[in-house]
Length: 553
Image 1 (cartoon, rainbow, N blue to C red):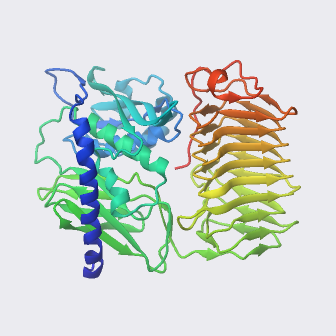
Image 2: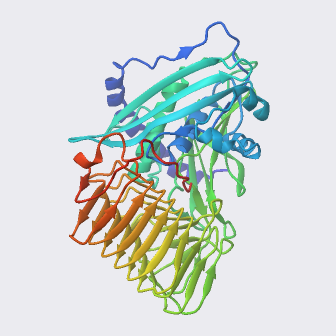
Image 3: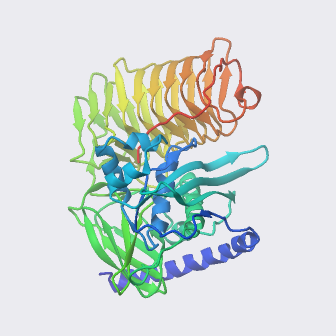
């Protein structure tokens, strides 16, 4: 239960946050009240299905997590309707067992009848995410989200409901969505980009789900949840600290939350009408590398709703402190994670640092200097994660004159000055993610092969190279503020990538000695040569649609 001191401390913060958000929403409401609501196509005079599965959404955007995020938000709002629904992880598991997951996520045709038999449902919802994120124009930026969705009967194949809808949020606008409570109530450590995507997805799905015909329930309809927020996103919670949770929904209900496998069904207290709050004090032995929070709101008659957290994974534990110097081979593991680097970590020449799947390292302010060898060996299910312990940036990974074959596989690096920087070294980077860094990947007089990776939302350039030799394939370089690629006196082969929606340029090439082949890439809908490429670059032929890249959640 929530003790009185914590409840008293949280109450004024909650109230203040609600006041701030509601004040801002009045302006947004005034602007939006003149916009017509979205109009769906609905099959008339037909009995509505009982049990529905929301399939993985097909991602048609340059934002790799768009399909996952929009589907999760759609499910959260849909779960308050009077349908019985399968949780997304159950749907995905059944599709994978039957070798249909890749078919569905790629948008290939799978019959509704077959899906109904496999999933045990009466209808399925298909979704195509058409946009998510900031679209740069000449004099402004527009954050938008778009989805084309339809509910199809598994028995007849008829479309019961369909709607294609896009919402636009001007830069700085507070959306008409309770997810805006997150930053005001608990000042969560979401990046600006993450917050913008979450707000846009929330607004879009709330408006679309409101148009779905709602069958009459056998019992009272389940209470609606509007938002679930917490203070654990993007940080490490250590013993003695509190994980604070707030759920916003219908008043006078029974609210609770879980964080499997650590916390199960902990009650939330209604401190203001419809605002339920709670807290959990981290214990000495608590350890969780990557947890997802769930919120529940149950009516007194028994019906209930569930909300899957979209703010970000929660990390808990007393860290294992690493020494400042590693002079002999050392292996880091998931079991002893999270690790903490208090100052700089130097791997000396002749030593090898290996990070096994699931390793998590947090840095206070400085970074990691590798003079020996680096082997980061994450997997799709258990990636390696490196990030700042607080809200400030850390220095990042620096490969300094390493003569070894360095490798980085399934690794997520965020909040660093340099996501990865190499000088006179060699590295292979596979299926990794560099997000919210000042610089993404920087290569100086080095060679690198980058494949299947995501480099996004850097304050400077996504990938920069000087007197380097690089190969970049099957990757996504997007939403980097200064530009996508900055190549100076370098040789580069760049093919089968999505290079789109970067700030100043998609690719900038300097120096007479540069040789850049950038054929077979997707540059978005326009002609990149006219507006987005500076310098001599061979870009033809071009891809006519984006490639698919898996992301690290």
